[in-house]
Amino acid sequence: MVTEASTRPHVRLAREADLATVHRIETESFADDPWSLGMLTETLHSADSVMIVAADSHEVLGYAAVLAAKGAGEADVLTIAVDARARGRGVGRTLLVALATEAQARGAKLLFLEVRESNATARSLYRSEGFEHVGVRPKYYPAGDDGQREDAVMMRLDLHHWCETKKESA
Ligand SMILES: CC(C)(COP(=O)(O)OP(=O)(O)OC[C@H]1O[C@@H](n2cnc3c(N)ncnc32)[C@H](O)[C@@H]1OP(=O)(O)O)[C@@H](O)C(=O)NCCC(=O)NCCS
Image 1 (cartoon, rainbow, N blue to C red):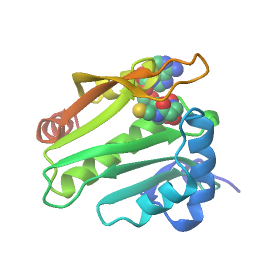
Image 2 (cartoon, protein in one colour):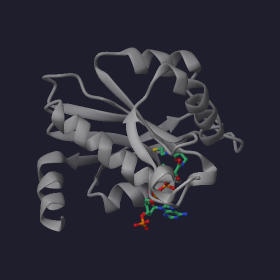
Image 3 (cartoon, rainbow, N blue to C red):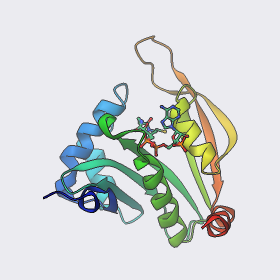
Image 4 (cartoon, rainbow, N blue to C red):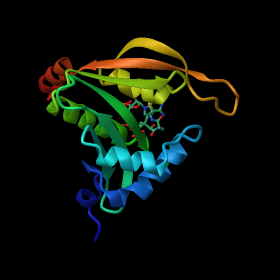
């Protein structure tokens, strides 16, 4: 019998066997500029990055990766996406919190990311976790169906402050 506990999503390190599903979610989520399977594989095996997945007892629901070279003091969210069927249930936030925790464990003080200006859902998630707007990279993203390149909003999280806030609200 499938119990609620066995189906609650948990986060773990990604494995080679997850990559086919990760690649499917990536392709469905970023139709204009998805990472190839090769790029995902390289990230999985890089000593400078960490890739995680959120999975229930049946399948991978989402994934995320952070570039956090030891000693760099800064980290970058490389990618984060949740299967469209599993969105709006807290999986994205769980992945983001796990990434920030991993970046901090590797000594990062600041966590950066870029997000499409039009991506209101992701920007809302990042703002609510404490990321601040620090700039814009004009025409950063390749053109989509409308033929226009899109600006990236650059955001930054102070990991020490984030961690203190988490402890206070726990
Ligand atoms: C962005 C994404 C990862 C969020 O994952 P998710 O599992 O749906 O998000 P959660 O359920 O954890 O929600 C976290 C927050 O996101 C925001 N959010 C989620 N769904 C939203 C929606 N439909 N509209 C507006 N904000 C939304 C809210 O701030 C929400 O917090 P709340 O539940 O306290 O209101 C997911 O929408 C996704 O995979 N999108 C496609 C890929 C992508 O854009 N990745 C980001 C690239 S920078």
